[in-house]
Image (cartoon, rainbow, N blue to C red; front, side, top):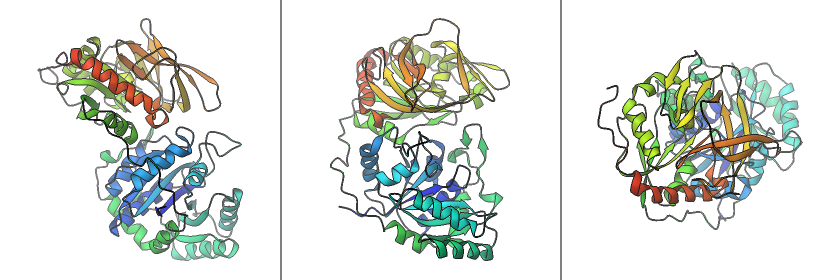
Length: 471
């Protein structure tokens, strides 16, 4: 049994400031010299990028619906093994998840799976004694969820905070940990898919300012004490992934346009024998040598349409790689890049790779969002017919066919309702709107590495482009 000091930072609702609060705590603990392991509840790629910038450690996603209790505990214990403290940022409100009548897929469910104490973030800007009623309601709603502390956001003065603290601690057993002042300089810019990524922050001092703010108005000693109040976790019997020797090179697109990857997806590809090699469809004129597979993650290709279109050598190299039978796995933005063209929100069409006879069209208002259960209906690079996996959709684009399209998978949502087909297939290329978490089905990662080994011998050398970008 190991202590694994840990806390869940949860909000009363979306937009309450739990990401700001989490980053302030992560940065402040790092300033104290702690090895802080961050996690994010739910299918999020953006917040983990900020976690990593604040702590210097890779953040991991945990999710009750996509992964389940056992996988969540396995991921947690592996990542937290050498940490002094672990901090898990929740999603939406504490009890919000995939169902309106249960805690399935919620931050509360995850807190119970990890037996983790919960810090509740509340917008205190217009509250006094009513804060005690809010805290009492959240703390007593599910007795198995241990709400041990509250942190107030948007509180302008120490006097206001003292009113809130007195009210909460008089009416409940929950400890008031402090507050954060409203500060426009601590705001992370947002856009259509959420906050901007950490690597886009021009001012890297944001995390130092957050640390200073938390150090001034948050009781970090009490926070660390509460993190140690959880019961010890039983050591997972499989805390370390069994790793096969690296036998095939996998090119992973990584730049401003393609940046959405679950850390565990990449780790499972490595564990299966993949050697990951980073490249940029935006900036590189050719693919890395001797690849057996290309992994094109999601991101923001719609913001970089002209630059992606201008890099003709890379587009041609990827198309040749696919047509020669090389394994390509693409999700959401990566799949859009493999179509004939991407039409941005202003209606401008940008030429893309052209492996799929379709165009991807951005829409300003219509968003597709939700959990997805995927089943392979036609054997493909992620596995045989009947294989199932789980993931998440989040996009503003649609696919407009310009010719016959073949699909390999069927989809249902968290309630089991059909969501049609996903997974366009051509050659050994699969393009999905769904962001799969391979932790829900590790056989997907194994199948991709096996496919990469098989196709490497005839894809290698077919994809080299020697000309410069823009020529």
